[in-house]
Amino acid sequence: MSVKDKVNENFKNAMRAKDTLRLNVLRQLISAVGNEEIATGKREEGLSDEGYLKVVKREARKRQDAIGQFEKAGRVELVNQENQELEILQAYLPAQISREEVERVVGEVVIESGANSLGQFGQVMSQVMKRIGDRTDGNVVSDLVKEALSHLSE
Image (cartoon, rainbow, N blue to C red; front, top):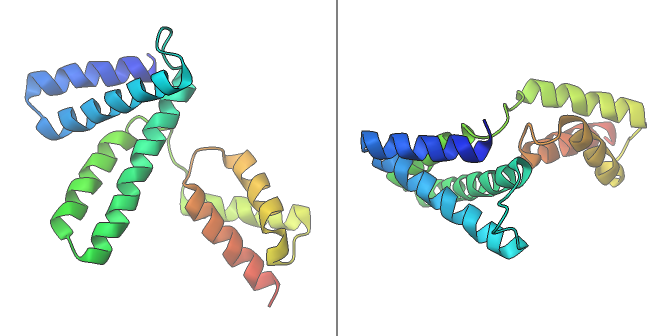
């Protein structure tokens, strides 16, 4: 079953169950997908699963950014709502790998590449992202690569 089919099926189920939170999140996602189809000129044939996942990731990232902003502002109720919305969107994303697994991959790449300073950040980062793809947040990878390289240059 494609991502689009899953979203549409869950949308129908949310309508039947009167699950307003899920319904609103999926409605926003479907709208964002429609906008992406228009922007890319793929309105007739629709987005591929890869394109659909790209939109889901973008929507999830918006929630993550909002969570950070609301936490800074001390808006706990909005943080909770955004977390719930993020959970709904994450159900459509590929399984994420653990932080420990990312640390292991970063360590392997640093050793294999012979990187020893922050000046080689881009090289290490690109190799790590090739290995783990979209199975984790790029910000987490970036932080771990910076941490690993800064320890080497000390």
